Amino acid sequence: MMQQHSDTVTISIIVPVYSGDEYLAGLVMQIERLRDRWQNANLDLLIGEAIFVLDAPIDNSREMLRNLAVTYSWIRVVDLSRNFGQHSATVAGILYSSGDWVVTLDEDLQHHPMQIETLLKRACSEGADIVYALPRDSVHGGVYRDRLSRVAKFMIASLSGNRFVQSFNSFRLIRGDIARAASSICAQYTYFDVALTWFTERIVTVNLDMSDDRYKVQKQSGYRFSTLVQHAKRLILTSDFRILRFTNSLSILAFLSSVIYGAWVLYSRFFADQIVEVEGWTSLMIVILAFGSVSIFILGLIAEFLHMSMLQLQGKPSFFVVNRSSDPKLIQEVEKLNTAISP
Amino acid sequence: MFGLGMIGSAIRDSLFDFEYHLMAKIDFDWQDAEQRDRAFSLIETSCLAYSPPPDCVSVVWSAGKGGFHSTEDELSRENIPFMDTLGFVSKLKKILDSARLNFHYISSAGGLFEGQRVINDQSIPAPVRPYGRLKLAQEQVLRSSFGKNEIAFYRPSSVYGPMVQKSQQGLINNLVSNGRNGRVTVLDAHVMALRDYVFSGDIGNFVDKRIRSGTTGVNGSPVHFLVSARCSSIFEVVRKIERTLNLNLLFRYDESFGNHSNITFSDSVLPLGWSPSTLDVGIRQFLVGKYSY
Image (cartoon, rainbow over all chains, first blue to last red; front, side):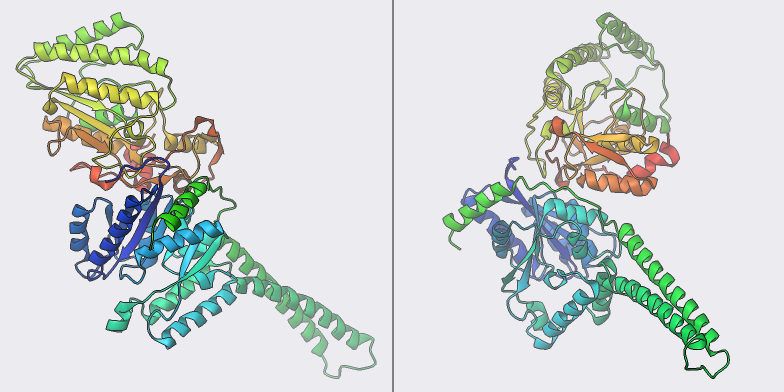
């Protein structure tokens, strides 16, 4: 294993593993190729570790990775006690990492390790803390599925008020400190990508060629419809939840409207020429409006209170200090990548 | 046993659980060489008076007053009692000719490998502070004084556990203690600096097993990295303690110590039979139940 100098920019790769035994050897080979490429170019840039998080795999991934870890000392296998889902596995892997930058990618070679260079270049050129890879074309080879995914993300972005939702993807490059800080605060239902936005707004995207060959061949996805619904629910609940704020505004509006309408009803009853013929109508309206508006107003306050409590419970920080001192070094190494190495 | 700080006490407590008992508690003076000689004589007399004669004597060195911030001068003074002890143990080995003598030395993974990341069994110690250099020098002296099967080097990372009076307290102990008393903790590293934390009780159990087995090595290696191989940032530690104690910790940064570098370990260094507690479990273990204080 290469000695890590203190000024070497290190990268940790995190791969949640559930059913990838067909792809893991290929993935490891690709990571090794990238490591060699950087080493041969004498870059102070190193993939220090690739952490494979076994999320109770249903195939031979465990045995395969144990064997690969014997050959490649940079492989680390973290074995979760049961299936916790891709998000939790990613969070667990990040908490085991120590790289200056963290890359998360899928097990099935949908995300090619060689593309990490593109992510790094984008991070340097934009001064970003997070770079999400977005598919240039259809990932699944099915227009319907990809469009549905885009529409769902658009709706969630509108509901949640989080403008980054449409960028979210499991292939991401994250500044190590921010990745670990966000992972530290992630509770069971916290959506990891939303937690990341609590620590930084320097989020950019890059379009890459991606292809979900497993889905194209097997016509099977790791996600069922119910899983996607759960996903969306978590996303909305973790986000700033614009709909709750909207409820609160609505309650204030309803309260003010009822006061004005109540005043008009009273005025009509006692001072206006127009006489309310039905006996008791005015008092009934006043009572309904008063109680109704007060109830809606209190509900709005409770919604706001719940929203604040949720964010506090989920650990949204009031501030966070980030150390970007290694950025010039990364830029220097990425420039070497641009000039010294042909793709 | 020399030294009853956080680690020494944990080893002692673990031994007591297995029917070991205290024969004598002897003061050990860091300044007074004559007093130390008297202590050595007492230990020697006890060993010789033991009937039947012991077939194995284990010496544990878990003593030390210095820490990461100690100066070269302070540590060179601290090395004198260590060298005296080493001389005494060598003499004792000759006297107890028929008995096996094992030396268990508590070193420091952080001191030896400061600034290195993903430290594995191929990593080379490269201390950057006087404390780490002293630990490495003491390891080397021991290697030249004892056979490979007579010596065990334990290299723990950042240790936390039940407080012991007048002993070094690590970050977690300081955070817990200050948090409970409403005091401010001064952090000497960046909030995202990565460290590896181990519970003193786990170290006690592991060293205790080695002592009871009468052997020093595991799989032929005398070096034991007593680390969790799961790094944590100070940020994460603070949040975990806040959740466990249900309070807000107060802290401020003092970056003048320059203790910012990350120290993390690969799981390839973990010795066989070593099962470190996770941070949540470890913190709970020493705050409640058996290890409460």
